[in-house]
Amino acid sequence: MLSLSDPLLVQTVANFRKQVEVNLVGMFAVTRAFAPLLGADLALAGPKGRIVNISSVGGKIGPPFLGAYAAAKHGVESFSESFRRELQLVGIDVIVGPGSVATPIWDKAEATSSDYLIGTIWERPFRAFTDYLLKDGREGLAPERIGEVVRTALTPEADMKVAETAKPSHARLPSSDTDHVVGRSPTNSRTAGAASLELPITPSAIKAV
Image 1: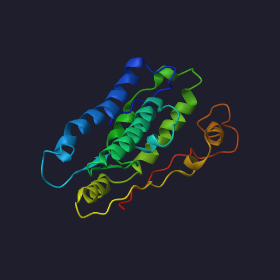
Image 2: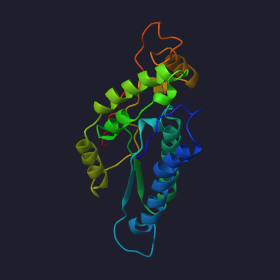
Image 3: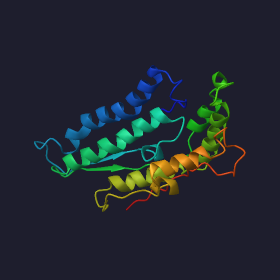
Image 4: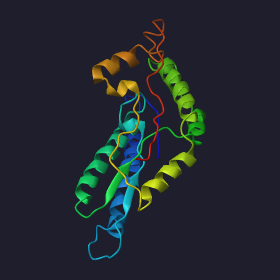
């Protein structure tokens, strides 16, 4: 996974493209390469396999300053759905499991400088958003929990159904309402003096069905 936080108007095309290449195109290429061994090649005998693609809460909503990452993860959600519906013709399940995970990626994010935003309209909201994101990520699911769910999903006896993970409450709101909530959050320098609202992004719980 690769996530390079930036306001979209200052993010380079190269960084945007790199995130899409790593998080979406790379996953597509690997999935496509191994699909024949999982049962897409009807000439091969044996039980069908399963494909588990790890997505993100960023595949459900579009957070500020994570536009490229969110675009890639929305792509993961969509291409996984399309793959699942195509591969059900040969009996292969495709499962996507988003959620915040407590890994060293948050330490790397903290070490990244945002000095280039000093004096811009994004300086204060970007800093507030990053602080919240770091706290949220470090309180996310343990990597071991993800491993347990993936192992369950790959167990032939497991009865897997298409299921939604728990979403942040605002993910069920119309986009315009979400814009309003985010716009009045402490990350918005224009409304920082208004009623304090916690940035509406919370860890998702991954559940084995």
